[in-house]
Image (cartoon, rainbow, N blue to C red):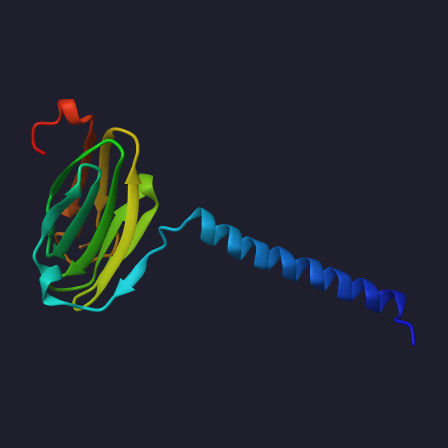
Length: 154
Ligand code: CUA
């Protein structure tokens, strides 16, 4: 029993598209392993702070509220890998670092996490990109990445 020529073509192209799809998923997973995660909620995340694990590994516990981010300024040396843990103490806010492709929601009772590598010096603006009231446009913070020798606030 032979397959119709057209049928065979359909099966082959389906297999091709399917394998491209699977390849793209696996490739994306290996290349961008800093995909956002949603973590179980814990009160300790509501305390805004920067934790230094070693000279190039940091944790930033960022708390969004009407209408500010805490901590407002984060100083890091070049080459730092940072786990951002984001939450809100009131309404829904956004947490956006454009240059680093970070686009998270800050939600009360929720923890969103993303790992970011800061391999170039510069000032990286954090903005709220979710309308949260009259002070929304003032919600900004920054990550200041500098060479360790130039940085006084580490
Ligand atoms: Cu917070 Cu907009």
